[in-house]
Each structure stands twice: as C-alpha cells, then as structure tokens.
Image (tube, rainbow, N blue to C red; front, side, top):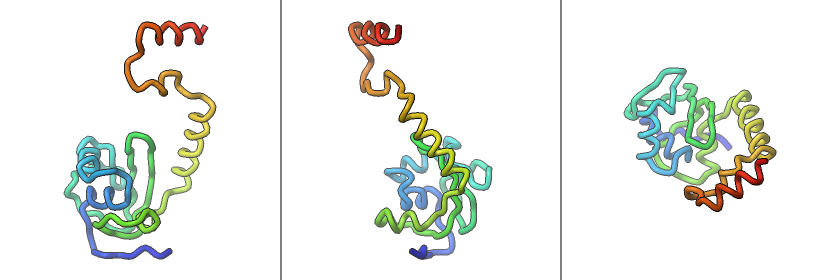
Length: 130
C-alpha cells in the first residue's frame, strides 16, 4: 500500500497520534516534551514540523521504535493506513523481537500484580523465589 501524503509538513505530536504510536495527542506531546521522541537524534518540541525522510526514535513506554517517516498525515485513520506512514528500520525490528522473546521466557513475577502486594502475596512471592 502506498503512503498518501496529505501535507508538506505536520506537527510531530499530531503525526505520532495519527500513526497510532500514542493513544492520545496529549500523551504524544508529553512524550516529546520529556525527550522520549527524538528526530534525527535530537530532542525536539511538540510543535516541531516533521518532514518525509526523517528518522525518529520513539519510546512509547512499552516499546522502543526506530522509524523513517514515509508519509505525512494529521488525521487518525485505520491502522493499515497509519502503518504505511512509516518504515521501521531493520535494527529496530530485531531489537523488538529480541525483547519480546526475553519477555516470553523471563517474565517478571510482579508484572501480573496490578496493585501493591499484600503481606500474604509478598510471602508467597518470597516462598516461590527460594
């Protein structure tokens, strides 16, 4: 599928939201402000305009992505259209697959807990670790 180019330049926070790296535009803008998104290796502000061909390093909390911008859009559409707006680098794909493999075999014991463990839970965790 060929990426459709709607505009010449788009705000980076809008593009990150439209391409579904972040659930809301506010989350995308906050990530850019905190330095979790880098353009060509440089930290930027949410209002920075993004152009085709630029390389982004994106840490959305769960995954680290390295992508090259292929198309620009400022509207959120179907996931297949969103994926056509960027191309992930080979190194990024390999890193993500390696991390997924590690998570599959070595899960953190407390990852399943949504709240702070109770005294009983802590004792069970300690007992299973020994």
